[in-house]
Image 1 (spheres, one colour):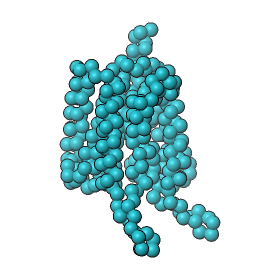
Image 2 (cartoon, helix red, strand yellow):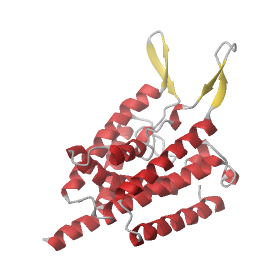
Image 3 (cartoon, helix red, strand yellow):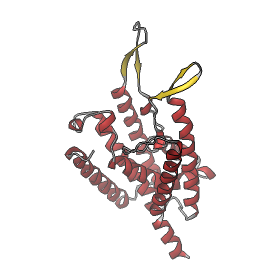
Length: 257
């Protein structure tokens, strides 16, 4: 993080976002066509990730080897779960109530989540070394996928095909709250607990989906009230960031009124 390779990639991502946004606006590309392209990008992204992180791991008795992908690569983070939303947005019923709430949610969550991921690229600590930033397919998968999320989020708003109103701030926060709460279950489900005489003594390999178990920066949570406070902090931060993303929506609604 914050290496020369990181900054070069950020420059490339900004250039891609600007060029893509200008192209979409000039050619008046439909949101449906953009979602089709995004579906292709999502498939290529996941294929690249899966076939680059798969490992042959021996069984505990050493008699077998199995292909295995570590659980933290499952598409259950805020950004990767957008893959499911993108396919629903492309092929789902645009007249359904959920559809009309999902697209306004994808607008801030895609942009904010991708910006946070690009600013703190965990890929350099979990998957590749910084000097592999332009030689590993994982780097291209990570940065181009998140660039796509920002382009899509911006165009959901600017295309004008989806009516985003101030009330969608509340529905977006509700969707985010539900997903965040579900991530607590997912993190516990995917962790590896150790029991001694039926008593839980330790847990390892927690996936930390949605960062609800540990902060993305090195801050130790040693007491349960630390974790409660941490949840309040990230909840307040999410509310503020989504509100910032909705400022153009609030302004437009006030102007129209």
